[in-house]
Image (cartoon, rainbow, N blue to C red; front, side, top):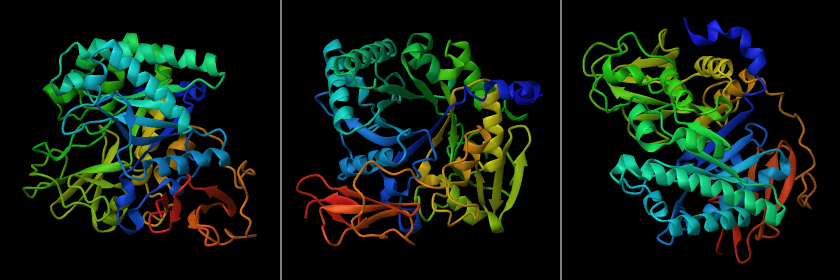
Length: 452
């Protein structure tokens, strides 16, 4: 019997513990064509409790640095949303992989490098008005560097926590948040983390409970199954959310620090025989989606366009759906599976959920006939959050001098033709005037501030 049905009576008791709905956005989503293009102007400030901007990296001097040409302009647009919803928290994700190598390898190698990175982090976050950092530790030991990186990562987390506490005392500012994206694979977890040594120093832990399977497998399998399949055996036995969360808890992570990962995308396969069920032979990915344009996965809004002609099915063992049409097979998440996963995390008293990503949900409401952000809104509702405000509180920034500019306009960013050093943000009929950084002007073509 599934865990959440066994302890369903505990849902009400734990609902307060599941207090975080953390949503990631990616700085490469701005390059998707047409209706897939996503910038901070597409974010509903009241949808998530936290938004994580992905991704920044680390230079050879152990300092945070940008990746995209307009990251700092997008930082400003994202953090301006806190003027509309003062309760919103924003974090900057740092790390990832560069040519298969983690930029943290050099950072953690010596106490001096760690200290330089921590100083850079505090300065950078304060300068750009972020509330914290999300460490994308993916995963130096996993990529061939020495196994003592496991211990060095612990030292980095502990030293960052102490430095954030000291900074808050010295500056009398709110303490910066410290979070991390962490692995779901049992071998990587055991090799990369001293769980009971880092958990108490992190404000929350984003467990990446997705990408368990994909087109690299020889048979169709689901990207983010809640439980194991009856067909799973051997190493496959642990490739599911329940096994991952159980391991993190067993290794000493407090339940209220763990956030369950909810993917707003599906993994695709190319069927190689007439069999189209779970475990059917496959040979690589289905065709790339027209917006995400990457073989192997489709955004939820692309899946919505695929479903009307497809045959859909539910995997009872794993509490997730899949669909197939011709030789294309996709395992994905939908509102029902999101709701089921939220019931699971609530029953365990987890701290909440994190969604990868805002920009792969149907953020515009144009594809799935279910309104904007149907997946994330489902999670929000299932977690018991109060209804979002129907009117926006008065922002603390400058109001648009042109009366009624945003009346009848969709939410988003607009050029101020009277002054190109400023631009308008429309949200729920309200108009807010923002100013570009000195020397820059607003370009409507990219919805960003850039050189004239």
